[in-house]
Image 1 (cartoon, rainbow, N blue to C red):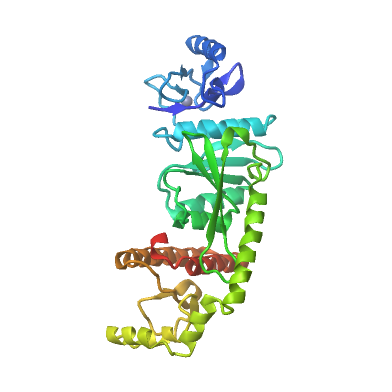
Image 2 (image 1 turned 90 degrees about the horizontal axis):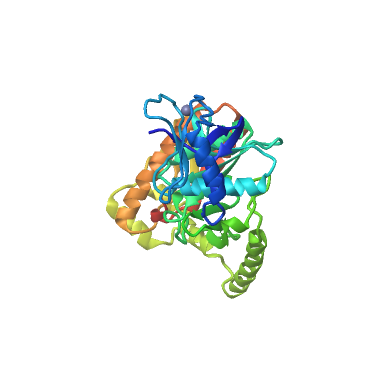
Length: 377
Ligand SMILES: [Zn+2]
């Protein structure tokens, strides 16, 4: 069944979510008026120009459907679960933020569908809700597509999947491109802003989060929700820095550096012992290097270890950090990392722009060094 949220009414674009207020209650007079318009065949599909039927019941969010025999190809990112509810919340956010702009739901752009498309004159904007398991590369592709088109993309993640304190791989990935993550709880209407903060010398980022009631907020031209989150982060950052400085007075050598020194001096008998027992002489090489960093070698003169990835696209081999965690987590994490690097290598083959290539490499290295906890992968 083809369902959609937009219709033409008296020659103007009209959205079914207009029927509800910010708390999700129907505006009864309007609902009556539009139901009559629907019965009089005054609601027209913007794509195929057939008349469409308004469905505005109590269980689902309001939408339009085509008559049974239609072959209209209207697409959307999903009509199941809390997807329609999320789109209504985002539509209303767009509506109160950009009163003059045309706003579309489920707008097809190239091969993609944007949940919300805002036709701002300076720079168009899309809002996307991620309720399903989007693959890392799918996200990168869609984000890059919007960037190429000169469209600001704002992402809202499903709160059930992304409620945890520790950031997921996906959140880390988005954080490399986006300053702040938005996590949307469709049922309470709360949006949680998250930022991964990394203090000097810390290898693992700390998550800062604060929640707001979405209907209280507007969004600006750049795609930032207007609230006091930035100031909140700033305050915490100052506090954390002070705490860290005190800690440094007490323990002058940062932990990461201390580990590095141990490895460089080869005084870590226990580590060597373990490697020796594994019977892999190549591990010797990794012992002399910090195990918290990515090391890059020319492809020809590298001994391969279980932590080496060949990157033919740039004629290098990468020795990647050892993961921490339970054995099964490490096994799974390593598989994820190698899949990720495999994809990266394929992408690097295709990139011709030198700067872009360097940026991709930098991001990947940041990512690999940041995520040494296996469960993050
Ligand atoms: Zn249609």
